[in-house]
Image (cartoon, rainbow, N blue to C red):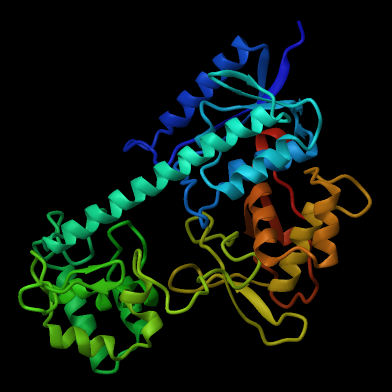
Length: 435
């Protein structure tokens, strides 16, 4: 008996507290059993652990990779794909856009099947489409109800003056009410220094020199310090979704049930030293933006590059390299490992990095390490493909790139400085530079 080769997809919105990806492992196990029961065999797995599928700004690299392989007709080393198995439709899609993308990819070749615990489904028939649409409608309604409940829960907590949920805020102990003896003094001094004319870069460097880290382990930088000192919680005020809450009785800002670090006058004074777009109230969690434009990366490879310079102890720096303006016509912008956060000893031309990435994706005249559809290459090279779509293509193929330091005084460009770390290295071999 010939079994139908299918792809197994698993997704969870949140991981377990132990960060062991238990939920997606269980889904794949169920998918394998479901596939066997209906004459199929799982030949490739695609996973999005702790990835939300309701919001349109959440990336799902496993889902994107699955769609690319369905359009291509096969998974790298696994061979042809003739269907998909999932424990439920809402694991694959919870938004109309994702439903359309999935159905277009699944039915791009005749004879495909979709399998869930209810059995085989023919995605080409009207009944198959209607069943998928019904599941989508239920998922959308469930998502809206859940989002409304969460928003109401946070608002009710805020009106009671209770602290924010989630990780403890910098400056307070784990109870979120008692001041942290060291961190609160750092915040107080930073506010006083800023009102006195100090720059945020200087404050961040002072904190870094003291070995200060955020409550999630991050190193201080001007942006995070700005967010900390302009948050209304520093003077005891409570905010929700970017707005100060007003006490119905006093008609004044609602005061929370935690100790304040500074006075309301000091908080207002320090906020007045920043432009509105820098303030916590416009950049903090769930706060509305000043414009309809979402903040995002400015350069194509931003977020993908890691510094490969060797440090004194022999370890690689590994710091994210950010983009910045260059001084030459050939390199109008560069990617740099900034000192303070990283070693500061590695920089590389922005356009030439992106040229190396393009060479890795589409090797001239020969099949590349990854077999992307010809339509993607044509759209990329013709300029038809947009910035965000290009970044999604890169994210579907690579985890990141390690940038080797250049040689001092060497003016020639070597693509070998860009070393890719392939997302599916177990299927396509070891990493190699852009030759």
